[in-house]
Image 1 (tube, helix red, strand yellow):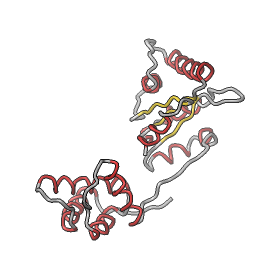
Image 2: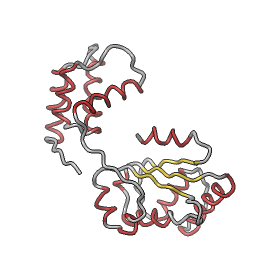
Image 3: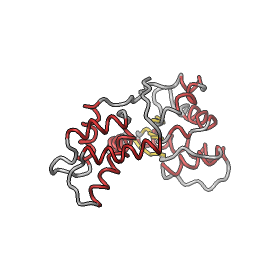
Image 4: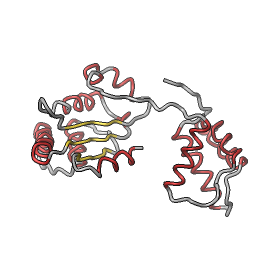
Length: 221
């Protein structure tokens, strides 16, 4: 989803999009540097204030000079610290009465929610939020088939019908768990010269994951 969104905005002339693959930063300065690097902005200063000024200058020049709004996409947002969330809040002040210079999109696991909720001033600035709950069987099957199509597969079905039910039983429809289980099943098929993922293959790896990670529990928001 992150890659699709990034590609969508990258093809538009009115946006300059950048992605942070990780939000992990030990200091304010390091966090500013991550953002600057994502926008390919060089900053030789070791000052946090100078780093913020460099980012503000970039946003101003792109917006006023080129008519482009900066879009910062943050993946693994659950790694954000309270301090970095406050920094993001202040970055949203880059604006004129008519135009926002910077828009921020954050993807994260459920651990992100309590961090954001503790920052009321940040919550007030959120325009849109969405929680991706566990997928039902039909949604999960469509997701698997879509990912195979995007990966370039156009041959016979790789998963027999019964295997989808078993995948859902073990993963409870959580996308990340589905992708991991399907990946290990496909690796087994490749290594053993098997051309279809059977119910038995899914059960074998599903039991292995159950021992490693425990039984999945569905918690809807």
